[in-house]
Length: 254
Length: 258
Ligand SMILES: Nc1ncnc2c1ncn2[C@@H]1O[C@H](COP(=O)(O)OP(=O)(O)OP(=O)(O)O)[C@@H](O)[C@H]1O
Ligand SMILES: [Mg+2]
Image (cartoon, rainbow over all chains, first blue to last red; front, top):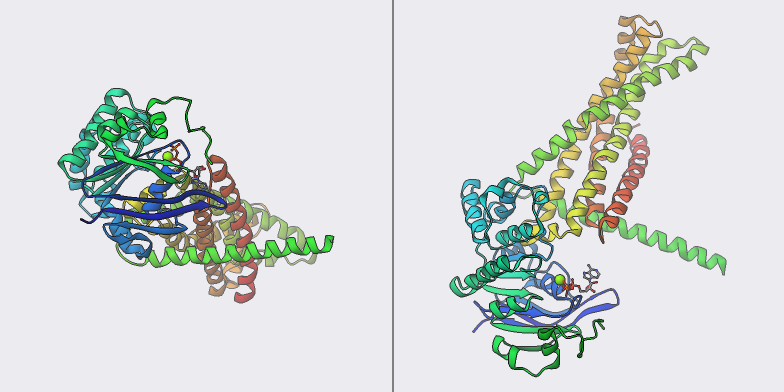
């Protein structure tokens, strides 16, 4: 079976500081893979390397079997059209209102008419529990949690094959988090979309993941299913799940 | 020892200068080659046209008026010693069209628009909005940079032209209502010495300056790093770089178009 995402020995450094030493992981179509790991271990950087937003030092990254670092710019943009991305900070366009943000990929990527794109955008806003009343507000007028949900709506608006969620539930109240978790599960289970998520939220982790990888020291040091997560005796994973200050994590990154 | 370190420093500055030139060349090539291929983002182009061509008019018009008035007065001071007052209209005209019109317009626009371009694009850079554009399958050079380069190069000459007219008008008003020139003589003196070369050379400068301001504005926006502080630094660099470039290019172009 072919993988939708294949990463082999990815290495990425900024100047002399190596963030990712050798990361390898594969994601099958329809699978929900979740990366956990301490703050600053390079989880967001990993997503950006996959999407070629950052140049990598060495290794191979393939999306849908295509090596992203070999693709010309126009091909890469086409590949990205099949990817949805939720950025950690939302990254909403602050010069555009909510509905133009959500429909952006449809209008500029798929070149749909504004009317058609708006209709889809309203549906997506509903899917993330937002009232269509805010459709014409600007991002600066929204609360942090609302921005996150608008960004989420934008990420799923184009019905992509794979979605990257960088901390989808951070900064949301438990009830909205629950809705978002259900939405992610719906995407992966019912619509067959693959997902690569990053989370620090253990509830969300248990709910949305098929497979989990723990990133530490620039490597995936543990990988397993949701079930393994609870039963493993790996001290890193145990410490991560319990949140205990005593264990192999020192809080500092090497 | 000191000499070696001094030479080393000069070498470093020289190398980073060459590297910057290389980067800016690649940057403009990427933006132009992406921009000339369809689809065209008309909405962005229209928005930028409004920003550059319309909202800059008050600032540009005001400076032109003040400078035109001051020019006429200064010329009077100098020329009346040699009873050469009749040369005032043509000197004001040549100074405005060939030199002050393009340079002043460009400097004002660099302060007004170059700065805001860098701040806007820089903020988009540090808040991942440019990454978001890319992952929504839009070439950010085509969407952000090309419309600015295009409208900047096309509309700055227009602003220069407006500046020329208002500057000459300022000179006329001073000459006629303050220095006591005869109105029809003043107008006659202005236009009899005017050649199309004067106006055209100013407009050519306008095209080059407009492109330069927008290129510097966008390039520095893209090179913003860190947070608000980085954007602030990039904005300063952008305005300083475009002002120096404007004056340098003005010198070169004046030699070429002389
Ligand atoms: N553009 C950059 N230039 C230099 N260093 C960077 C850059 N981007 C990220 N880093 C560094 O890479 C490391 C990993 O950053 P990253 O944002 O991936 O962390 P993270 O795992 O997502 O953490 P968090 O859970 O807090 O979001 C950090 O030490 C950061 O300083
Ligand atoms: Mg992160």
